[in-house]
Image 1 (cartoon, one colour):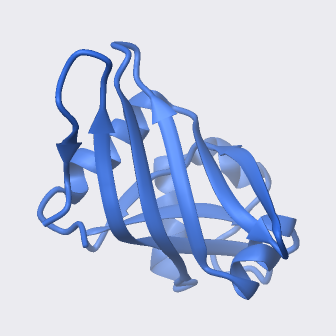
Image 2 (spheres, rainbow, N blue to C red; image 1 turned 180 degrees about the horizontal axis):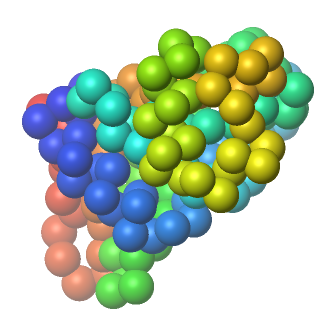
Length: 136
């Protein structure tokens, strides 16, 4: 589990801008770009819509993996479960962090879906250095 290094994980995702979130759809992996990574109450939150396939896939199987690369050639792999937390204050924190999403989402509406990462493992890799295990 990642707790002590949660800020390092969140900063890597924020600096990368876009990361790729993988879920499972029956026996088929599904990957799509995401960009939200808000640190709130020592958890990293993502935002999507309940009507989207990604939300339905996570309802059926909460396991995820994320990968992204920074501009120095390092990449991170994160795995765990995404857990819904649709309190208005979570929605507000996400939308304050990503105001451009207000065109699609509103605090407390029926479609906004905030999920936090219950991270089992997170590791930063590079071609030149040993892997940096961020697990506590």
